Amino acid sequence: MEKQEILSHIDHTLLKATASWEEIKVICETALAHRTASVCIPPSYVKRARRTYPELNVCTVVGFPLGYSCTGAKAAEVREAVADGANEVDMVINLGDVKNGDFDAVTEEIRTLKEAAGDKILKVIIETCYLTQEEKIRICRCVTEGGADFIKTSTGFGTAGAKIEDIRLFKEHIGPGVKIKAAGGVKTVADLEMFLSEGCERIGTSSAVNLLAGHEAGNY
Image: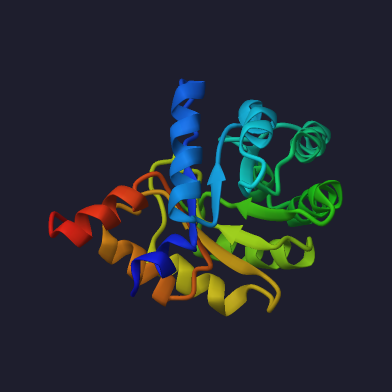
């Protein structure tokens, strides 16, 4: 798989709590230079990034990383992120609702946040490491019925990240309009190629640019 083809599917990501503006600028400039799909940054930096890099495709996160904020708070986050200039929003579902079996609430929250996002892309992080097989299948239905654009495996802050068996499960159970994003634990060029070949439209990672540079140099 060609380097630029891979990069065109990468959400170049920096979401650590201590991220400085200088670090955010580096990943924004790297994303622009390497033509990644987007840069995924904390919501507090969206307005500044949009003002500084008007041509950049900016993604941010909502209810991150635990997902148990109330729906109204998440919706307000989405509206502010969009007003600040975000093109894409990655939300975290309420895992308490999942464990209580209240999948109607999960669907309704996704629907509410998609309405708040309007024509912007909404990705739904389901944090697969905490879910049973049946829960994952049920959430595929929630994401589809809620009208989201993507289902996403992980925050990268849980006990595990993306696994290829979950991507295959998603493909069986999501609706035809829903795309797939893998995130968390994608650490090698082989991982990048594997997830893309299995049908992921996006991969969230902080390391793709360096990995591919090392691959070209034979240092991977």
